[in-house]
Image 1 (cartoon, rainbow, N blue to C red):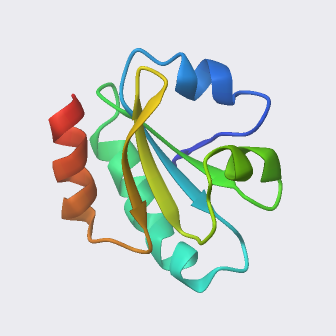
Image 2 (cartoon, rainbow, N blue to C red):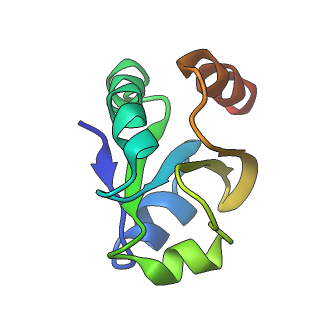
Length: 105
C-alpha cells in the first residue's frame, strides 16, 4: 500500500527525500481517484527502494493542496530534490507514470 503523506511528514518524507517521490493528491469522494488508487499502490510495490510513492488526502491536508496549486484531482506530481519535476492532472495510464519516473531515477 502506498505511503500516506500529510502536513506533518511531507517535509521529511517528500521534500527531503534522496529519491524521486510520486505524490497522488486525492479525496475519498473522487471517483477517478478511486480508480487510480490501485495503480498508485502497484507503483509503490514495484518501485520500492528506487522511488517513494504516496498519497495526500486533499480534504485532510488543504494547505499542501494549496501549496502545490492542486485545483482538480487526481493530480499526481513527481518531485526530486524538493522540486516538482513532472505534474499530471487527471487519471493517466500506469506507463505514463513509469516513463516519467524513469527520467528522474
